Length: 191
Image (cartoon, rainbow, N blue to C red; front, side, top):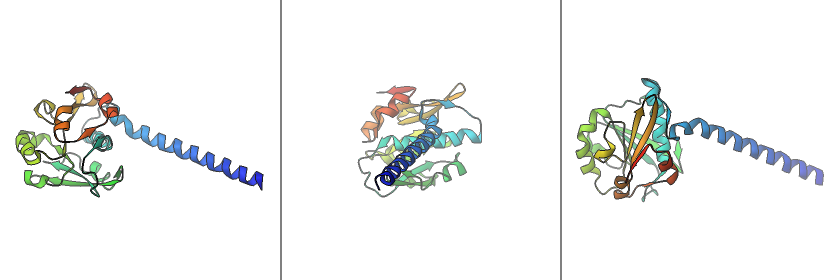
């Protein structure tokens, strides 16, 4: 009986190591997008990588009202992600399933935890900021100068790499926490 018990423990330990290895491999496949910089593909593939950034940002952020059952990611403007983002819907971030909403109207941003402001709508940033004023909403864009205008996370292409910058003061003002691990990966942090 002792040898069977030992064999079971050995099998269970081996399975645990295999599962840990698999999870590590999956993390490494996804984390290049969060590793500060990733190779910058062009066109449709660019937004596939940026969609991965959005999910990773959600994993490294905290909200004061995270007791809500779902995490709502809103795309404000013409959606550049398309099917790349659809493939990520219902994925779990922490314990919360991701729900995606697309809107062309500022008043459609109610209930959002994260708002990606598209390049076509970055000119309406003041209206977005007025709409979410005082609310714990993580704002993200991929437009030049967006961080300096108050967007919390700005995805940027630097040469042939994609990275991101952080407006930490804006995040703190809205009660959104950004982990130290995320901040270490940023190309620039505005205090």
